[in-house]
Structure formats: C-alpha cells, structure tokens
Amino acid sequence: MTATRDAVSLRAAALSILAGREPDWTRLGRCSAATWQVFFRTERCALALKTRLTAAGCTVPERARAEIERAATRELQRILSARGQLLHIGRLAAAHAIPAIVLKGGVAALTSAAPVDLHDVDVLVRPPYGPASADMVSRVRNLLARLKS
Image 1 (cartoon, rainbow, N blue to C red):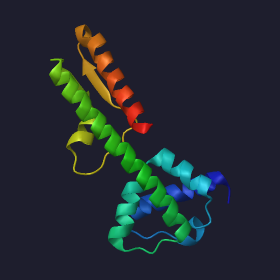
Image 2 (image 1 turned 45 degrees about the horizontal axis):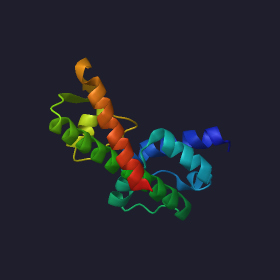
Image 3 (image 1 turned 120 degrees about the horizontal axis):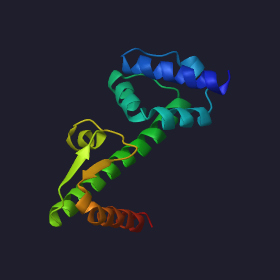
Image 4 (image 1 turned 180 degrees about the vertical axis):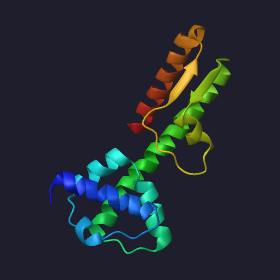
C-alpha cells in the first residue's frame, strides 16, 4: 500500500468510525506511524476518534491505539492552550478597555462544551487599538514562551 492510499484509507476509516461504524482494522493496522501522524496533522480528529472508539468499546490494534492516543493528547494540549490564550487576551483587553471581537472558531473554542481544535485565532479590534492589541498579543506570546521553558 502506498502512503497516499494509506492516508485515504485512514480518512475513510475515520469517517466510518465517526458515523458509528467499526472499520476494517486489518488494513489500518499496517499503516506506518508516519502515515498516522500526517493523517492526524491534516485531519485533526484524533480526540473525536478516541472519544467515539472508547464510547463504542471498540477493540483497536495496539499500534493504531498508540497513534490515536498520542495525537489526541497533542490536540487536547492545543485546545487547552488556545482557550487559555483567548481568556488571557480577553482579560488584557478588558483591563486596557480595548473593545475586541473573537471571530469564527475562537468563539466555539470558548463556548462549546466539546473540544474545538484551532490552528489560529482571529481577534478583531478597531484601528486606533491596533498598537495596544499587538502589545497584548506580544505579552501572551512571551508568557507562553516562559511557560514552555
């Protein structure tokens, strides 16, 4: 099986799992770790898959289970980080009286009970507040850098 065919098979299996059906694990178990990783970086659905598989009590081959678990952990870390950053930006905006609007997925990340994996967050401010909001974003980045070290 080629890497492309493997990735397409993984996508079809993910859709099947999320629709409540059990996939054919014989082919999926042979996918390389690199293929699983590329698939999860592209589709960002590991947490949803893990949740669905656990709820359904599906038996998952160890290799696939380990890749799903690794990717789900990364997704959850991104989700929690995005929520934290949005809340911090909100507190800073309020403290400096900067009217800001969180757009698109950022709203879902803050309000949805389900985890929302974001690639980025869009925050809209009026032009006069641009420099101050850029300073806020810089502070959040610096805080995150300190936390990571």
